[in-house]
Image (cartoon, rainbow, N blue to C red):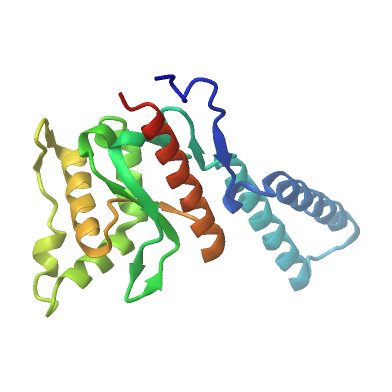
Length: 227
């Protein structure tokens, strides 16, 4: 059977975090320059000038932060779904997850898209340690809420929040950071049905469209390459 991944063009998704960084930084730099030039004409800086200085500085910092973000935060190609983060990227192969969707707590949609992972090894092998630590830090609130959802009376939270030193699948043994990450994946899956999460700034309709596109691409590539 022909391989449908041959000639498959990568699909890249741009997020709001990287947009407008250059224009924001340029505009703030111009304001800062005008502010500095204006100081030549005055003997003493006024309070409003101080606010302009602080605002321009914050604008420059925000513009720099946007420029440091990857232009595309998500890409799917013939290998799978790739999440691009300023601290690295991970790959989730097409045959390592069943579907993507929008996770919910108490029937409230979260600002993430999630993946129902069926092959932890396929994902963990492509997960950089530095990125794993960063994701665990950034998504700590999500994990704590998942733990809270899993505790009927709230008495088991401290036990479930304790990090584990080892984690085993059918084929591999993980230690340290990857073991802790895999343990969190299981807890999140028990609470939401999804193991891996990507933060998104889209509205719910746009997020649903993205999930449908991922699921359709996965179905197309996995079915057409099956032997």
